[in-house]
Length: 63
Image 1 (cartoon, rainbow, N blue to C red):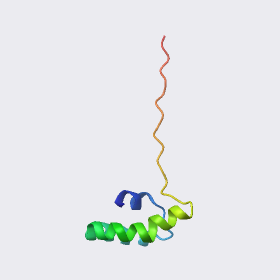
Image 2: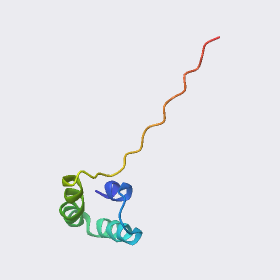
Image 3: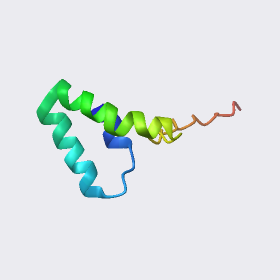
């Protein structure tokens, strides 16, 4: 959940910081609260945390 929170875009940067602190300090209870209040709601609306694309390796031409 912490990784999801770090990658997710919130309306306000302070909201992200608060959720990170909640998750870090309350362990699994914070994770359950985050799941029901943020992640589940966003997933139901079709929003998700942005994923980072892996950089593609460049092909080297043999000479």
